[in-house]
Image (tube, rainbow, N blue to C red; front, side, top):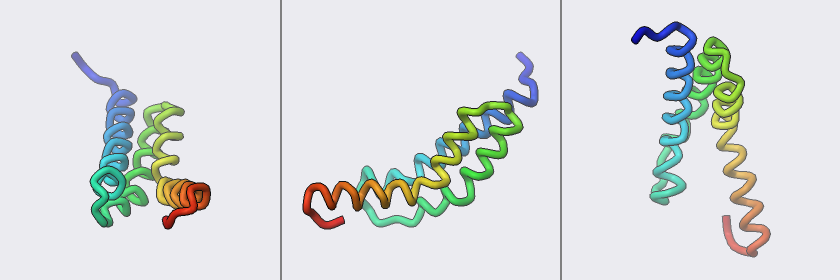
Length: 88
């Protein structure tokens, strides 16, 4: 079984996406203060570029969303806190 370059780029893009998702696990799921989420600013733009080379719109969009995930998490966290009357 021989992979072509497009499949390799797509696979690497998905790996970058999974690394970005895993970087949030300590903060969101384990509720431990960790700075691993900073990896999303480095890894996911690279994943978006690899998704472009792999010709996958989904990989590009998902990696861009993960690259902006800090801002999304902050928005939804403060929005939820405002609705429930709690602290962020």
